[in-house]
Length: 247
Image 1 (cartoon, rainbow, N blue to C red):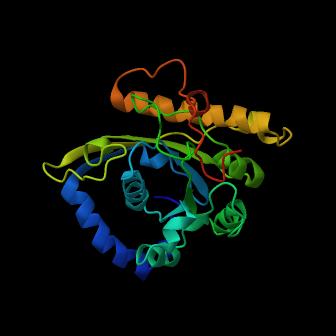
Image 2: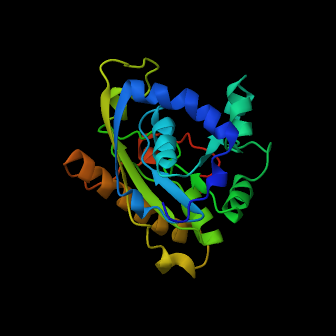
Image 3: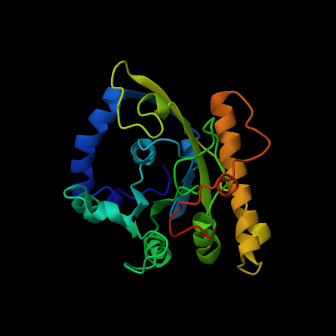
């Protein structure tokens, strides 16, 4: 892909890929669409999120596009033996839960990656969707804050089929037979209407709505059906557990 640098795929990353990719290929067949939509240099990839297996698939999609993925990951994962060491070694970014003061500002940490022209994956929903039919729910502000404050494009992404490998909220992997997983990238979301607006909650909310609409349209294409007109809002259902990048 144009603009991709070989230096991103370090020896450590390649060693990790030799472990992870064979497993991914064991459980799934992956079809990637619109890989050419990914810009050169820094960008934020904003995917839908409905399975705890999603990050592996999203990371693999970027790897196949010639890029190395970085995530904003729950800080608690960095304290897990072995996993924490891998996360630190691969430059992942710890995000503390709401109400905590430990750790660095994740937006500041992400901006350092942006300065180096790297790809950062941010799940705008902040957690697995609560929508009963697994459509994208109301988004949080982290992705658009990073985009508007640093002038970084947001590329929407949708995938479908991962739920057949690991259902939502489940810990039981379905390995055989191999499952079909489709991944599609979209055009960078046009956030220019909000670029020069005051950085307020209303601005972030409107921009986040545009991002979630882009993701939903891509998922509609993959699923071959229309999403509900009303987006699932966790706050209206008494579900308020989100990460630090909410608002």
